[in-house]
Image (cartoon, rainbow, N blue to C red):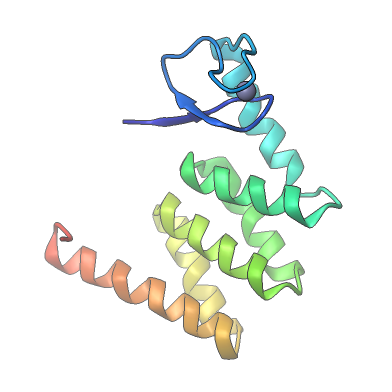
Length: 134
Ligand SMILES: [Zn+2]
């Protein structure tokens, strides 16, 4: 099942929903698509909470479009917490490009961020080898 989010209050909603259960806003398919663009813009927001929320949701949406801006933000940010959230998001997106971004981070970073990236790569490798993870 694919997860969707309300473009107005960012609550998790059913993909088939046309109205948000939380804020009662009317949601069309077009608005759901625009939502991704909105989130990509939010990555440049000045409020850290908004950026973190956007990173998390883009990961949940497995947004391929988000990989380049997420990778850029990962290099730019000084925040350990944000770096970890971006790594988690890339891991959720899970495409080859996303995984190689995690690999680059592992090579570039030191300390806790490197450890975090290494852990994610470890479980990625395990899944690839088994064919199906448990
Ligand atoms: Zn809503």
